[in-house]
Every structure is written in C-alpha cells, then in structure tokens.
Image 1 (cartoon, rainbow, N blue to C red):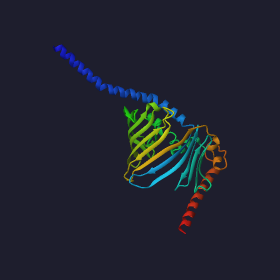
Image 2 (cartoon, rainbow, N blue to C red):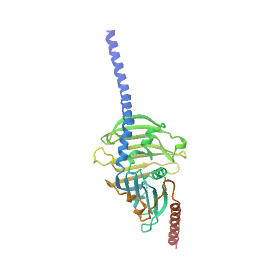
Image 3 (cartoon, rainbow, N blue to C red):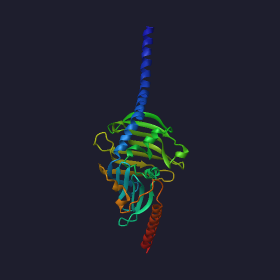
Image 4 (spheres, rainbow, N blue to C red):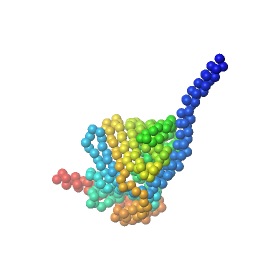
Length: 324
C-alpha cells in the first residue's frame, strides 16, 4: 500500500514538474527561433523595401481637440536610392530629401509655385546614410522593423537589449511572439529618446515583422512617455509584410500633457524599378553635380546657405505683406 502511495506521489510530482517547466522550455525555444530566424527574415524585409513606390497619407490628431493635420508624402526606393517628397499639405512649404549612389540632398521651397532651394548636400556616403536615416527616409518603407524609432536588427544585437520573455500569443486571429524587454543604451550611444521597456509583438509568419508594440520611451531629460503602435499589412501577397496602415499613439509627458495619434495610410503601393535619375537634383529642375569622393562640395555648401537665407527672407517678406 505504501508503495502505491509513493508511486502516486511520484507521478504527481513528475506531472507538476512538467507543467511548470514546459512553458519555460517553450519560451526558450521561441526565443531561440527569434534569435536564429529573425535576422535573416529581416534581411528579406529590407530587400522588399528596396524597390518600392508608395504614397503615404499622414494624419495627426489629438483626443479632445478638433485640430487635425493631414499631409501626403511620396516615397520611392530603388536599391540604395531613396526619396521622400511632401506632395500636399495645407500649412507647410515644400520639402524633399533623397539619397543616390553619389550624394544626398535636402530641398525646401516656400510655396508650391516657388523654386526649390538646396539646404543640404552630402557626399560622404557613410555620414549621409546616418543623416538621412535620422530624418526617417528609411523609416516609412521599413516601419515593421522599428521599435519606437530604434531599429530592431540593431537592438537584437545590442548586449544592452535584455529580452525578459518570449511568449506565444494570439492577436487578431494570428499567432504572434510577444517579446518583453528592457533596454538601457550606453550614455555615449543614446539618441534623444529610446524604448526603455515594454512588449513588441512579432509575426513569425510574416518574416518576424513587428505588428504591435506597447512601450515606455525614455528621454535624455529624464521624462518618460507611453507609445503604442499597430501595423496592418496587405493581405496579398500572403505572408509578405507590406504595410497598409500604421497607427501610433503617444501619451502625455510632464512637459506636454497632450496625447497625439499619428496615422499613416499606405496608398498606391507598388514594387517597380525606378530610374536612377529620379533620385537626383536634376529631377527637381536643379543642376547636377559631380561631387568629390568624400566631404562636401564647397560650392553646394555656399548654395545651401544662400537657399536657407532666401527662405528666411521670403518668410519675412510674407509676414510684412500680411501685416500691411
């Protein structure tokens, strides 16, 4: 009789051990998949984003306020070439920036009928990529690889990005991996803000694309802010994470008590080979340059300064004429 009791007790302990340890093994297995599969899958997303033409309708609003700002942007990519241009916005002047194999540039104009002015030209492509990337040129085409402004492939490599758990969850009838994390970048590597803790939901069926996140963002001045984001993908082609809509909600901070909602609708999205000429100054009616291998052309630096000066003078003249 005692032997039977010991056998039953041993079976109970074994069943309890399996029940407790199985989720841990499942979590570890899913995290192993994340670390082994995601980097290669993300390379495929980057490749998909290298041949795109898409118009994005950007709507910004705030709960409790009737003010809504809407603008339309055109984005084009072809390999390393990239372009974004403000197509329509009621209150802003024209803006554009682009990167090609030889140089990058930023343009502005005070009104739709006004000519473009150059205010940045860079020919050191290492610096240029960082400059343009910081302005979000790659963000729109690769939004499913960003976590509150930080690039997921870089985060996963960082020793300061600590994954606390990876759990399988079902959201909107899809099986996702919920990655809970903490992140504290080194002081000399910090940007203005970074995702300090939270959850990002990755879809293994769509190349481990980030479909959602719910995070706390930390600022250099010590403030924190809640950010959430949801990305909807096009149903076709299946398993391909081409974005259809992105909604980001930013909560209040100590210095700004308002809440903001940013919605991007991706329309006219198509993949095509775009001629290199569309990523040059010539496409904007400006003379082409033959920049040196590195550094900035002094002529274009001077021209950029003159362009900025003309914009300022134009704005002052407009204010003067409005007052009179």
